[in-house]
Amino acid sequence: MVDLIDECGEDLANLGYESKSLGRFGATSCKLFVESKGKAEKLGFARGHYFVLNVPMLSSFFKEHRKILLEELKEKFEFLWKLHKIKKSAKVLFVGIGNPAIVSDSFGVKVVEKIEIFPFKKNNRRFKISPNIFANTGINSYDIIRVIVEAFDISVVVLFDSLATTNLKRLGSSIQLNDVGLTPGSALNNFGHAINKQTLNVPCFSIGVPMMISTKSFGEKNGVILTEKDVEEKVEFLSAVVADAVGGVAGVNL
Image 1: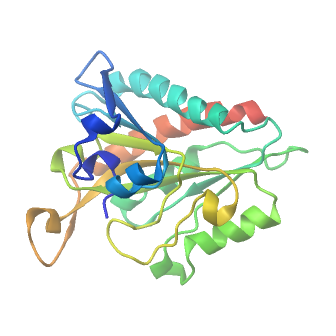
Image 2: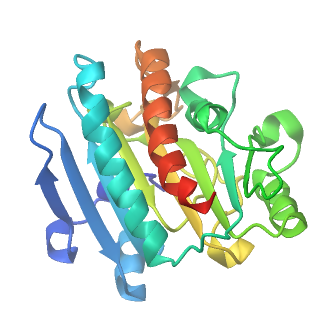
């Protein structure tokens, strides 16, 4: 299984895939809406709305990409927010998936750390957690999230996670946003439990960045997980941009 929908191996041009230039540094914004069961089965991805931002020159121009990414992420996230008719009274749970001890797997945790909540506000409707990984806790992230959703009557879940890619050039240089949730570690193992509207009964949005690649992508039998040398800088930069973009849109609930 792959994490990025445009790495599914299908000819996306005939399936509604659209791409537009963001004007500078070769940055592009792409979208693919998977409306039918047949299209979902063909792609191997759940039905829903997918957006992918590509910034191939990020390593050379960090600061210059901030405005480009922030504006595009806000626009796409706001589109999904309105599409699902999230009310102003909605209780939002932000979830950082991943292992905080491993830089390449800490993107989700870093985003959640940077999102502001208001725990002492009388009518606080923003909550956040980082459940860590099954190997460190013995508990699936899904089970932790489910309990919180039920206990606090959560209306919507927003998930953040490091993804895997099959293309070295996309490490830390793409951002995928969707409204179908995710399955933790789905591209690297089969242990995760799907976190989505079907399993939680509330809308689930997901934002991920490919930070890892397996050597299996190069034909090796014993896969080793690789990342790039500036992964720490990318995790810090992208987690800050995503936190600002999502926090701003979700802020309409305050």
